[in-house]
Length: 131
Image (cartoon, rainbow, N blue to C red; front, side, top):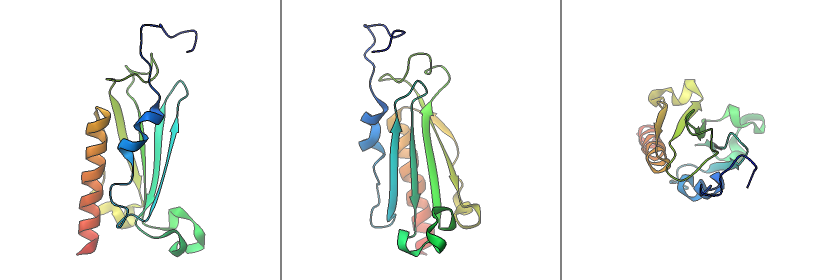
């Protein structure tokens, strides 16, 4: 516990959210890397690709059909570090020329709502590309 936290606040770690943001479609999304940062500005970073890593030109993620999600605290939540019940914001960056068919809109909500938005977006992209 850091000096600016009250002992009455049950502070959780962003790492506890990792299972919630695990790869929902491992058969369709062969590359998925997720990291949690539990610093004062806590966040999750997810990098994924619809291409297997061995097929990336020059072995570079940004040359594949990639996406990157960032889940971080909303401005109101940053005062306390992450605590259960705080809202988070999820945003994404994609390879526009390939995945631009379904840009991911920034969304603020509970971690569960954000994970569900991410899953629905991935499902729509993989379904579109399978056609």
